[in-house]
Length: 103
Image (cartoon, rainbow, N blue to C red; front, side, top):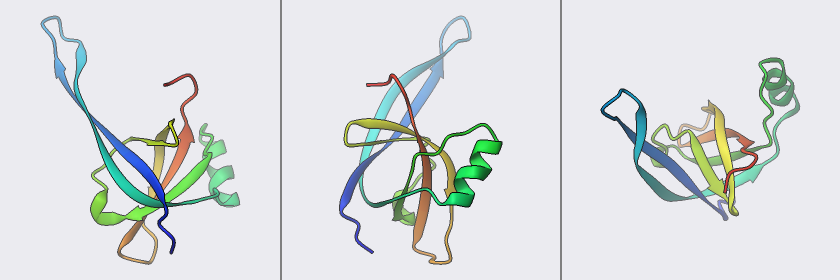
């Protein structure tokens, strides 16, 4: 597999303020190499039935993933809507949806 794309796995830590609101305390961006691929047809339709619109998938090494729910690739922000563990025990597939209006 050709892991030639660079993505950034984004994790946020939050804390509760004085009146009970969750406030983002810090944002950590971790560089990872990935293989970008198209969303499979059955994945697309299954997600659409659940109200999601997957736009792409990224294959990364499992050891690099720590349950991040957002990624950035080519200055585009994506939400991770599903994580798939293929038969290969070293990889993980992140099914992503582009976040519109986020810089």
